[in-house]
Image (spheres, rainbow, N blue to C red):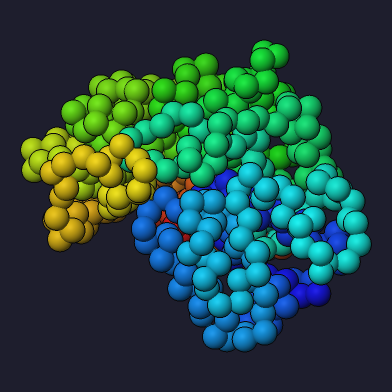
Length: 419
């Protein structure tokens, strides 16, 4: 059987899709483009209305190009609105997040029993990804006022530390040189296990490893990014100098309305600490524009804060009502035209911040992992760079970042790179 997996949304979904691919392969299925596949798994997102729309459009396009295909839909949209997806052409199964881990076992048309959930680790390059994304936790109990994810992912559930480390052992043995550690609410890792396990304990275990694997911490809520974690990243060459810390808004009145448990001043202090202790770190953030009740003054306050923060990139999300959330019932909704205009202004700020960081890194020497066709690499501090010589995929190189023209190489192992 030929299969394809189409993934929308966050890194957790990406990690889930890799596990689905692993189990499909264990049962003898082979990967193919969606237009030639017998079976297509769509792992959906539902964080915004446009994410829902994107999944529907993709399913219709796949079926138009491949009329005999069987489509299975899973993920957050499948959990939140299964009836909408069952009505789409060729959809044979809609499987919510609660059953996603057993998705492959629920497809009787697949032969064989496989090797179980941890049979064999995938190898670099599967699904076009050189690094492995590993989910260590799912679910969220934070309940921000705009977010539907607690409804679609349920309560926080962590994988035992021993199981996580065993998966990393298998990944390293399979040739992975970078692993991204991810979760729906990653900072809550271990709290539900009630055995002293925590994100800090996991990161200490990763920092102590002796194999040549770099670990990248995925999105982490600001209140969960402790100074202990910052110090650990600063002192370890096993942990990537990369933080993604969603701010969501720069005005305290909006943070309270969003039910975010920190202030703009706290967030600014945290980033200043990171920039002081890890000066070359990439620091990314998420921003919502057009939240109900956001005034011109609130938006201006948020922009002024962003301009002062030592961020290196921004992900900008226009506010979208999610039925069942607190925010969906709030008054003073912001006009869609204004939301789009504000989104453009914040993206422009993000572009300026990214440019300033690239300029500051010019001439620096960074460790980078080659990806794609070997002409590109991703640095430890999250630059994707173009190399001046081709290398094998999944190879560590030392790359000088956008240095002055004619800058001599310091050693034969150093390659010039352009951001």
